[in-house]
Length: 568
Image 1 (cartoon, rainbow, N blue to C red):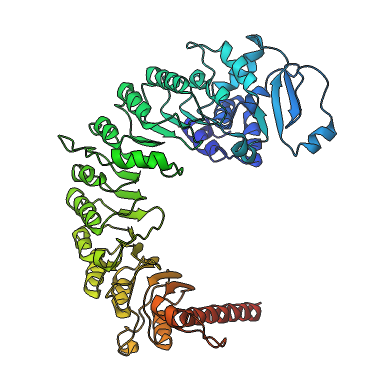
Image 2 (image 1 turned 135 degrees about the vertical axis):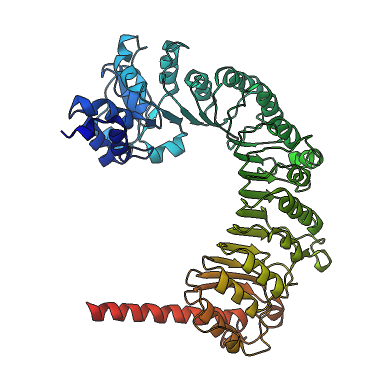
């Protein structure tokens, strides 16, 4: 054997290619074969083979056969009575449950401990999720039997670094504290429906044991109504946060102001995601409370989050985010994403973008402001349009790759602004500003206004803009010869008026030769006659343009197919 293969780093690089949470059968078989090939490979191959475990099933199956009882999923369990037949396994569709025939003793755990010390990442998934990743489900009684033998000096997974718990059964969740160790660096929990006392007890255990956390991810997607923001605030106040770099919290009644006051001084946090789920669960009463609480404004005494790179907020009202953004220390901020559910006036949107443009520096590359569910109240009228000129505050950021302003207010843009945006953002890949089919069109952008993006933003792959496609001059004279974008296959124009489709279609074909789909309507034209003439005649408006591209796409496929047959 070559001496290079004896180097641990090289072995880890080679064996690591076969490992992973969703490791294939071939990869697992290869690592198992390497483990029994020679002693030089054994430890490293076994470490990679057992590094990531979705549940306890594989480890439990390593215990003595007389201890483990396998039952087809859904069958009643009678410990130690009878055996399962081949027909039973066929009827259970390949899914099985594992039980213990008797409580295990220390000697029964010898093989279990030999492999468990190699586990670095462990996840307990719900039954619905687990069935797609593993055909084996461990009964909670097995977890209880194993945890009863574990202790702080002899944990089940002594070298565990990542723990992910997503199980809706409260009885299984109560054993979570057994898997928590001081060595954990990443903790991801989706809380089941627990009583408040149980929930607070688990949080206290985490706060006491976890002193080296780098990533913290708390979610509440199982409708655990007792798990709310006030408990998280108390938990964060006693948790050791000095090493945290990534924080994600999804829960009801999130106390945004208090959580920010606790997290703002942390100078290591690089990624922060906060989501208040009260209105997402359709809790009308909670939504009313949230409306009152969410208007608290928090202003830190010093710039917050000095090393923050990614900020993602999911809130009900956008107003409380403005003072938070105004006090960010955005020297390293690369991505800002804010999703809100309540309609806000364009003035608040202006304040939000102004705060970002004044607090961030050249590192900013992504900005997304969007409303979760389209809602068009009476306030969203022509008198409350979004002034696109506020986007000029973002022109000094040369590395912007994505700009999304998906709001429920008409957007006022013009060709001069688009020309300046194209010149300022040469790396732009995605642009979506106000292309909504339900809103009135206040845009003054015409078709020639798209040309600067073709000539200067060579990586552009997504466009969504309201335009005025009523052609008043020959477009062929305005289009530079040989200039086209080969990346864009779909365009959104929202509610945009259109004049002559026979002029608009060929112009877009020359700019975007690979265009396949256009999402656009002309509401004024629909009110007067719709997309198709009443007698079933030819399509009009944007439908006619879309029909051109449909036939062009069919023709291209036919040409490519005939060329392939001729070459063959």
